[in-house]
Structures are given as structure tokens and as C-alpha cells.
Length: 92
Image (cartoon, rainbow, N blue to C red; front, side):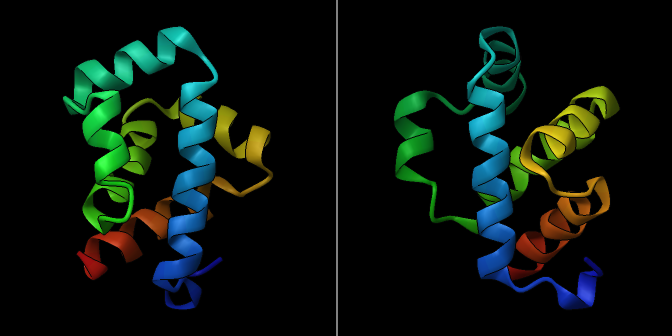
């Protein structure tokens, strides 16, 4: 998925898939909370915010093994996840 082919709705869907991936692993979840500062309560409140969704994908980009594992788990190419983050940042 090229950046120009990524609309904010598609990007949001990829980010939510990525969040599910993150939250299914307690150690990764703890690291996500520690790195982003997002708590479960404020995460729920901010799920419609493109910058929050971009932060989820940025978290995965910060550790390539997580990005690759997420891509494999969700069936999205790593490049699609990166493009989604960029689209969400532009939408923010």
C-alpha cells in the first residue's frame, strides 16, 4: 500500500489492528504504556484521534521486530503500517 493509496479510514483500521496485536501481549502492552504514556482509560477516550492511532504505529516502528511480528500477525505488510502512520499524522 503506497502512501498515496492510504486514506485516513484505512489507516485507522490498520492502527486498530495493530493495537489489538499490541494488547494481546502483556509485556508489549506494558512497554507501550511506558513509551506512549497512554493508559487504558485515556486510550479508550482517544481512539478516534489520528495522532493517537499514529502513536500506536510509531510505537511498533520503534522496534522493528514488533513491526514485523505485527505485520505477520495482522496480514498487513510492514510498509502498509508505516504508510498508515504517515497518513494518520497528516490527518492529525
